[in-house]
Structures are given as structure tokens and as C-alpha cells.
Length: 528
Image 1 (cartoon, rainbow, N blue to C red):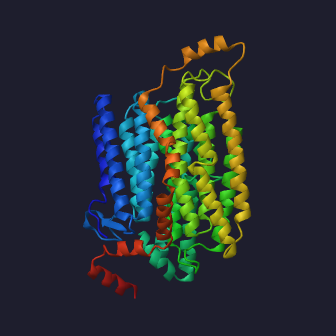
Image 2: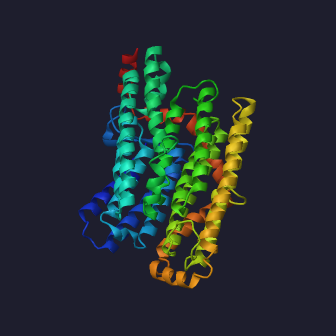
Image 3: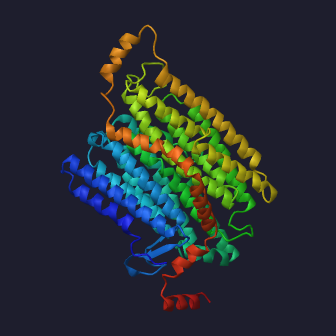
């Protein structure tokens, strides 16, 4: 289905980013207005695409009228629309928080924020591997600038590791894409879905080598062990709204991994997943969950703990994807929405807590923040949600994943004992970690030295809570009860999304519909 309006959420942040870069001397209030208005427009465009694809249609368009595989193709199905909507929601809340004053601590914040949105939207809409690489690079450059916003040695050190490791990943991406192109003659995802099943054994091995390199890159982007070294220091060092927006960066790697897996020819199980792939993903999931849990428990700062919780959530998502079934993927998509919004909200909450204590977000006994009466209920809400306790959405997402992997035991590899042990064990460890953090940060206070400490606290911390920051944080954390209240329609949507993603027929047909009939006939003749 052709959709001329499909490029709108992509072009809007690009144009506004360029405008804000040129108008860097505009008053900050004007930059905030332009940035917030643009982000809301991106969210509105994403919701429109969500409505257009909700019935199963796949939208596709060729930029400039150049047909695939030569032209730039944008494709939007249910999965893309879901990720775009999540990006819009996250971007709006993060920008609202930044408008409380954090955007004033450096230059070009709003321009970089729009370029970051441009990279994210492009990643979720692109229909070929080369442009996926281009949008990854846009993400890298914009996120590097945002990470450095405000300066400081910790951010500089984290940004250096972040850039070096991701540049290595970019090199591997190019090499992997080149091998796949050498084997198949195309980088268009819809073309790959067709041609991968027609390769000779020698070309199949070449394409397989390229695919392994791409999986390595996507694992780096998703911060899976042992490629996770860049993630926690970068997230912990970034300012709160930037860390909140980064909560979706690791999901970009997972999204790309999922797209590539769905292109693998059907093995007879209804998807491209085979037994070895299931075991590989299960091993990665268990390793990631274990590393994230131990890191969260051993953290000495709240920001670092939340960084490890992001990593842990990636393992839980992989656990849902590993079976290669629609039920498992649907559960993972529901959990993805939950964990992205909640971890982003927790990053913001950690900043509010740190601003109200002389000890910052260090997990030591000190004086509770001045606004503890407001922050403590928000922390309790976030802690219950992220630990996966009932009655919030984290519980439903994890329970659905556990049921989905157990159902696989009758027809596929019996991976469920490993996943059950990892997910349930990590929930207990996270509960311990967030309970300890809540007690130290918001409840316990120093004994006899509390008067002097309170005086020092009053001098060191910032005064009051900025209203935009509190609104943005509360909105993200309130997503958990809302996801539970509307669980019925949401789970139906994620189940339909999972089925469409695993069966790539509609995706391929939508892109094929962009090829002029004469070109298609000539290309078919050339292949013969």
C-alpha cells in the first residue's frame, strides 16, 4: 500500500534540527517551543501510522520516485508503527523534562535532540540495510553530542568508550553488508527475503558470514554481554532526559536483529527460527539477565543500577523472542513497551532524587530529598513495575513470556527451565536491589548528625522540583498501570504484530508493489 505521507515523521525532525542548528542564537524559550512542537508532531504522525497499519496493511513508499532496489524505500508495518509511537512518547516526556532547565547547560541541545529523533525514526522505517547503516551513524553522532551535553570528565570518558566501540561496530556493519551484497546482489530487505532462499551453497555460506557479522553489530547496539561495556557508563553519565531517550537505543539493536531473523527462509516451523537459533538466543538471554541482575545488585549509584536494569530488560526481551513463536514475540513486544517507558522514567526520577540530596544518587545513608513525600510514591511505583510484581505491567509481561517459552516444550527445544530460572531469579534480585535503594535514598536518615547533614543538604541541593520535570517523570511511570488497564487491546495488538513480523509475506508484497511492472519483468528475466 503506497503512502505519500510516510516520510513526514522522518523529514520533520530533520528540518527542525537544521532550523535549530542555524538558529542557535534564538532565545531558549523559542528553541523549547520549536522542539516540543516538533516532537509532538512526530508523535501525532506516528499515531496516524499506527492507525493506518492497525488492520494489517503494510505502507511503503520510494523516496523521490526511485523504485527499489536502487531507490530509498521506507516501509511501515505494525512493528515499525509501534516503535515510532514509543519513540514519540519517550521523546515528548524527555524533552519536557529537559525544558525544566537541563537544556541550558550546553549548546545545541534541541538541534541534537531532533537529529536523534531523525535517526531513530529512520531506523524504524528504512527498508534496506545500507540506509539502516546510515541511520545508525546519524544516531551515533547525535547521541555522542547529547551524551557530552553539560560536559565533565565522567561524560567525556564514557563518550570516548561509547564512540570507539560503536565505530568498531560500524566497520563490522559495512563488512557484513558487503558480504551479503556479494552473495545476493541486493541490500533491500524485501529482496533479501526472496533471494536468501535461492542461493547456491557457496553464496549461502558467504551470506551467512555477513549475517553473523551483522548479528554481532546488533548485539553491540543491544548491549548484550560481552559487548555491553559501553552501555552502563554512558547511560549513568548522561543527563537525565538524554538517558531517558537512550532507553530506546538498545531496542534499536533488538529491532534490527528481529528484522534480519524474519528474513531467514522458513524452516518449516512457521518462521525463520531453527533449533540452534533458539538455543543461541536463549544462551544470550540467560547471560544478559544474569549479568544485569548482578550489576544492579552491586551498584553504588541509582543511575548505574538503572543502567544495569536496562541491560537486564534486554535479556528478558531475548527470552521472549528466543522461541520464535508469535506468542513469545507478542509477550516480548508488550514487555518492550513497558520496560522502555519505566526505565526512562526511573532515569528521570534518579535525577530528581539526586538533586534533592547532598549525597546525590549514591546508595549511602544520608538525608532524604526535600521532596521525598512526592518522590517516594513515584519510586515505589517504578520499583514495583520494574521488579515485575503484580498488579503492574511488568508482572503481565514476564508471566506471558514464561508461559510462551513453556508452551514451546511440546514442539521445540526445551529451553523453558533456563529462562524460568533466569527471569524469576532476576526478579527476586531486582526486588532486593530496588528495596535497598529506596530505603537508603528515601527513608533512612543519618542519626545524630542529621541536623548538620540537613543544613548541608539544603545548601547543596537545588531548590524545589521543576514542574515540567515532575510531569514528564510522572507520565512515564504512570504508563505501567495504564498498560495493565488496557492490557486486553494491547496484547491483541502485539499478538497481531508478532504474527505479521514472523510472516514477512505482506512486507515483501508491499515493497514489490513499488516496482514498475516493466522493471519487475526485466529483473525477473535477468534472474532467469
